[in-house]
Image 1: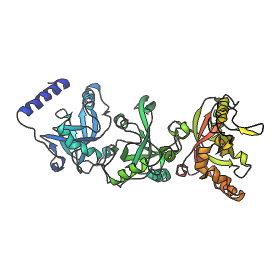
Image 2: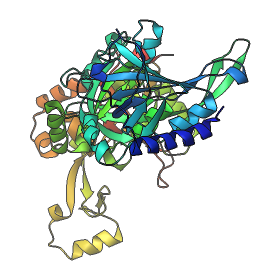
Image 3: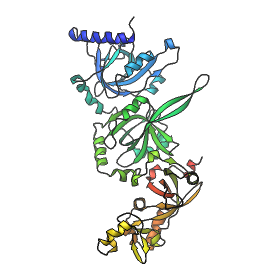
Length: 492
């Protein structure tokens, strides 16, 4: 009886013998049928379009069995799920030989009729009525060179119709309904940002007790031509390895079989990859091309509102209530970022103009103070630069929005929050010059457009040695579709 390693050597020898003698018959998926199950005496070439980490079934050490599930495609129309059954130590070796996107050859698979049992809740949808099973008599090898090139183009063919997907806006606005879709949904989106790989401990119940299992997770920020800030979470190690190869702002992903979930941490709907999920990078579809062109023509920061002003990163921000934000301010002195859903309870747009607009130095961007009747920067370096210019105040200053606002939710109010120029211009949809030309009536109307309206803000806390207290400022404004149905939804 051969050991597993000896059997691999023997198989390599047999393949060499076949190359010198009889040629192994090549079989295509479209020639197989559920009416003729059993061993396939031949070889199948194709590409791995999906793969998940192996599972080990409970049993004694001597009789443990593990299964490795992957999805195999050999033509535009035909792809099938494959289950590889071996003892754990042997299957680990096999699994390390190939990954998603590799072209492989499958030797001596067993054809089975696709069953309708619950096992298929954990495998992707496939168009064929069969599935393949592999065992000790089978083996899989990675293929490279001219033979592999025949199948590499299949990697860009989506597994569902190119127009069969939900937009990110539909996910954040209709997430409550989409959560109920047990078969998952399809999504077409671009990769904006790949988060850091995290390791967490999960408490799992066993037959008689509990144990703590370490799991890794990866979060990827998605965006499309209209909506941003939707997170896709991966828990499977094989899918994580595949997703880490994606390139932000370059790759469009057609995702099949994603589950919609409500993110309790961020208080917004997001997506989770499952064992049913398949992913196509830069799919060969009109919709993908249009999305790519749209993304390339839009400033990423303007589109996303999640990485603006050089500091706010929604992937690392904590969702809090106003009470929790105030508690953080009293307990900590560090710089941090948060997300709050609240009302603007004070927005004095129709008050004194100097409480809405300020002058800043064009050299250092600091606020200009009144220096003996002259509006000029007090920094020595900037004053030297001023002397080199014509005596014209407009050449050294710029007018920008600078407001102190109050934020309120069901837990309390925080005052004197800074609303700076970038966010104010985007929120008010006007420039400083346009605002100055408005009548008092127009300013009041603009104020009530936002006052007491529910808004989702990114908040940044900064410590400054010139101030006794940390500076709390609004760093970004999230699109309205990211609002939960009511502020009370966030109450714990």
